[in-house]
Image (cartoon, rainbow, N blue to C red; front, side, top):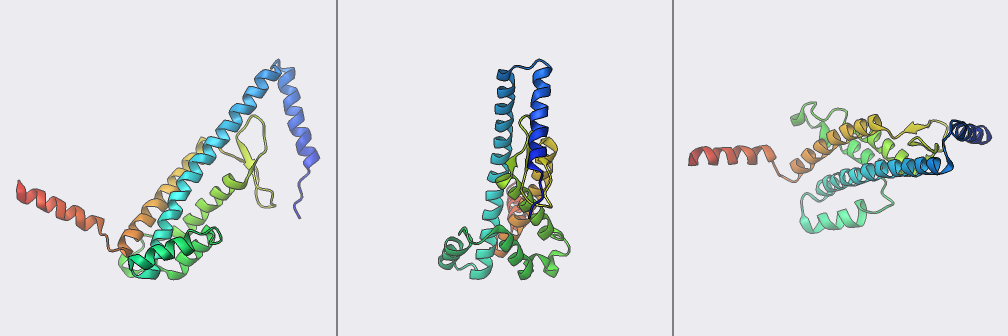
Length: 200
């Protein structure tokens, strides 16, 4: 059971609203601030959900390649019929990645240490943004209705931290996906450089 004093929270919001009116802001100005705030939250949500969809796509591709040994006919079935379905939550895919342990192979050294934890962190932020409700009328603040979650501002720092963590996840998953699919980006670049050198 969640212990939130909704009456106290409502009073806090009403008092803040009354204070702004006392300071001389008109109802129209307050409505504009509310609308601007809702747009800020919507933009943050859109950016995070769009980015997250691509991360999930990369993880789906890696898992489908892993389980089908690059058999393309089975790969697409595995992707479409299992990993792309709504009942296969991202958190379960992270668990599966961790249990497979592909990212822990000796040949990678410690290159992907912390990937699972970082994916969980990014997923938690995604869930907060996707399912959190707006809690303030002039601040981009959201929260989930659970004991352990507090009010979170979707401000520049939140977005910057998300981008940094999601970018790192993106590059790790992209590398792992390419590796398991037999695409060696570094080898391709080296061959390209070698070909250019021999032409020159």
